[in-house]
Image (tube, rainbow, N blue to C red):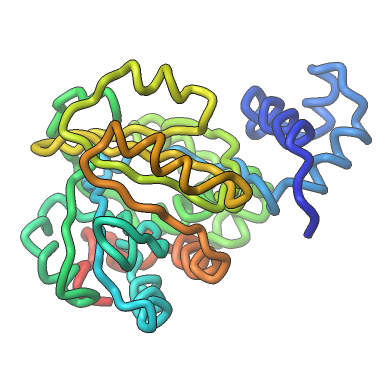
Length: 305
């Protein structure tokens, strides 16, 4: 697959941000765009470099988000990554080197299973550290819900998270439901504050490196200084902040480290490896369906996998 033309990709992202679920014909009519040009770009990039994904309230579902950093010997990275990718409570993991050499991991913990985190991580490494992560700016809200839906909703959430533009007929076929039933289920997810929005998500492989930094204090001027980079900021309650800068391996790694290290206390480089991407994608496709008990009574144990 050739490198994406960024102007074309950014144009398609901008269009899908305004019309995440509309048909291409409707988008072309409303935006005054040539339909065949739009379809050419869509066929070229959609599903390869970007998809439209559902934004889901993990808090409403009773899931807490954590970042973990595990020491894993280089000759065991793939073995440990494969085992982690079979656990739906692992959001994603990638090779990383810095204050821990091994894996950088995002994982989700049911609110009532926080006492199992140490046992969970020790299945994969004897040396690790982890932090709960919240959105920036931090609102201090600590009211988490729980899973109170039937199992069918877990399957639907997987579909919407993976590709929200899947035709409703195909969703209905996958769920064994009628189209009106699927529409009702989607509307219920919205009404209950679980399904928040739909938006295009660019594939990580457009950026194949990231600098992750942890800091106890955040100078917001740093965000202004680096606003030309794609940067994400999160709050680590009880510790401070996590900053993640995305970039390409074609850029100078040494200058990135020097540039960002002045603003954080801990730093590592994360590598978006193609093999790990495949493991992460495979895990994500059926995440909720494997997290939730078949009778819909709540979450399985994160130690079951």
